[in-house]
Image (cartoon, rainbow, N blue to C red; front, side, top):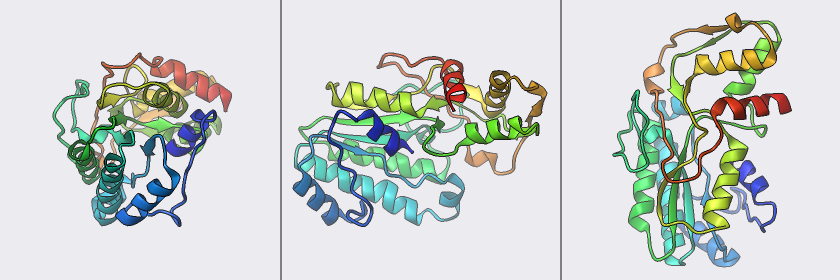
Amino acid sequence: MVGRELAHALATHVVVAPPHARVDITDAAAVERVIRDEKPDFIINAAAIIDVNAVEKDSSLATRVNVQGATAIARAAAARAVPHVLISSSYVFGDSSEPYEEDAARNPTNAYGKTKAEAEKAVETCSGSAPWYIVRSSWFYSPYRGTFVDEVARTLLQGKPFEASAQRGNPTHGGEFAVTVVKHFIDSSLPSGIYHIVNEGDASRCDIAREIARILGVPESLAVAKDFPGSAMRPSVLLTNTKLPLLPAWEESLRAYILST
């Protein structure tokens, strides 16, 4: 989903997106070979195993892709002095009612977050003369893949209730995220470091469901608050952007997305 949003935002650029059959990022030699052959001006690592529940049960694949793969890309990028960005996650932090700034200490509480935190450390450790960036975001939605937002809208339009948790995050428009990455890290050059790109404000999943009901003109009472087992694996993590121009409020971007789909 994120890769397709980025490819769309890069329409005026030549995009090389090798399939898994050509380059498995857990194979350092394959990563080095494709970078040598393609000679890219910039590398974006948007690959990740993101299924929180699956990673909790068996973290081996996530460790290979999220950590070893990210390390292979970071090392190859540094060796050839190619600017590089890692797409990361809010889950490098733990549960908090206050938003985390970019340079806050990492404190992941689930297995997925731990792999992404290790990936971030690898990018920092492997950094060379070329710019490097770690870009965190939260709760993407996009027309390129069905997400929580689409599931809620579909259910509510059928007149059925939708049960949603009190978990909080930053719902973020995938297209706006991708345009921001291209504008600030590819079409211009910022100092190396960690950046947050999220729509402004935060919400619970139930808040999002109720906002979707309002947008669709259906009863808000169809959005029902409920606690779910295993919610501890999905902490409430809020991010704040202190370094880049702000994106629109989450309600504004969500409305534009719902009304366009």
